[in-house]
Length: 244
Image (cartoon, rainbow, N blue to C red; front, side):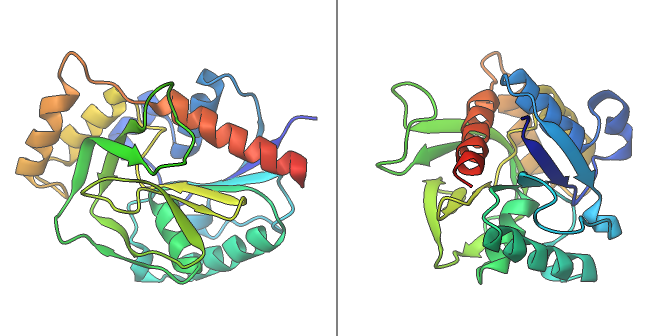
């Protein structure tokens, strides 16, 4: 039986990027496909108050990124936090990316705020903590596209840190064997990240931060470990769903 993955879409890509790259939900479907995994999907536009009937409607869940701020505490966000706890209690595996990473942390008693060091944009490099299985052979680090000003500033007691950087101390978190979250975006490839940085430059993203990010993004060695992270996420949900 094919695993049914529920995508809780908390945001959309900028309008002028949609035709070429699709929605965040589309990006996750494409990412897992490129990593060699075929799932069935159900998408719920939670930012528009479109929610599943129960935590058991899908075998596994993904919460996407969003331009919204978790601390806005809008009604749909409060409802999403309750669903997060329901999913955890139902023992269904869950993944969270960027906003998803943050709102899961808040649901479990953590805190999210604007980071004092400003924006994280472009390609960011993260180090795995000792004892965490390598993402790549003979390597204790990985690279992903980042786009955030907010981040987890107080870690929930229940969460274990898996990866970090000097800029983002809580870059990857795991809650028991049920939830795995990342601050950065494995679904953003270098092409999309470059377009996004250029689109946001001088708007929400300060020009200096954008230009610094673009220096590496347009370089000949620009690359992410998105497929390795996708493999990690897929194996996480499959293993935990089979256990369930």
